[in-house]
Amino acid sequence: MDIILLENNLESAEGDSTTIYLDDKGNPTGGKGHLILPTDINPATGVVYKVGDFVPAYQIEAWFVADVDTAKKPNREYPAD
Image (cartoon, rainbow, N blue to C red; front, side):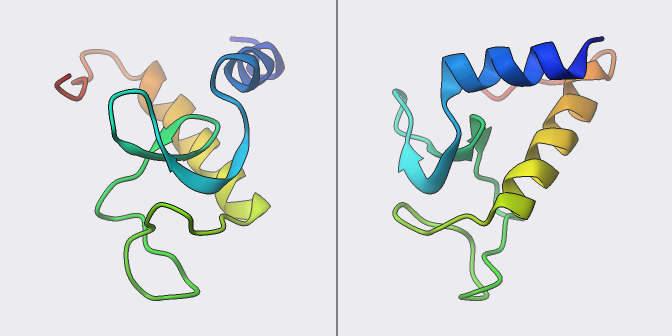
């Protein structure tokens, strides 16, 4: 898998947001299309990221790496629409 091509395609499709926003389905999202999970704790506040929160570059990259690893796993489950 060409990780650079994947990253570029994701940035084109999803953007690369340093602010948490609601996606087209109303889900809190940040970085390169990362769905905010209950485990995504904002170190500045100590609680889960919420719409409008700033996301540092290191966190965006960590989410991207984790999301790619998840996407590469066979038999993974997708969130319900």
